[in-house]
Length: 277
Ligand code: LER
Ligand code: MN
Image: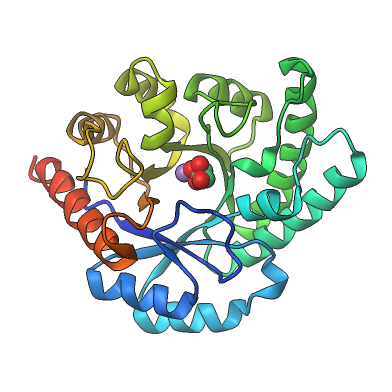
């Protein structure tokens, strides 16, 4: 594992997530991440058309910070946009919004996260919604490819969504989509709930594991709960994972700054164990 880069999730001011280390002014978020030592940020954006991407690009360049990924879930939480909605009009609007996210991400050659925005099954069969999802994902992947953007599908736990909860289910759909620029985002918080054997699951999806979120078992900063980060990082090391480790936790304990500091120190110390090999 040669020097994996560490990112911090920050958000535009109209954020609806409550699991972000830093909400509000993107500039302040970037500066705080830089001060602590982070290599990159991951930006959650509800509507990219309402964000000044050129300004962010300038500031990120100035601070020598990468933009690792762009989160999209706020468009689902705040506006109900999702790719498998029974209403075709909502599907169309979601594709248009995700194309805006891809355009935004193209400034940084970063990843676009397909988490909440894929939507809920709503009692339809897995086969039916998978076919719909695969069709829309192929169209988005083909739009993203010339823009050097990769799409990562994030399995979320059953209490948040009812379609694609595990790495195995997500791997199957990723294979159906069959595009080189579509992969998986694994999140320790969700894996802790859904995976029977986390390291085994990571090995199973290794060829398509493109991005990684960390929070502790309580979704506080890594190091403040009982998640076994050592065996997870060992598994990442063994499968040769080369993406970012992105901190996505509640601003706990003691607010965003303290949580971001604890998270950085914890992740760095685990990475160093394996970087020494
Ligand atoms: C998004 O990355 C995620 O993990 C969701 O659970 C949103 O909170
Ligand atoms: Mn996540």
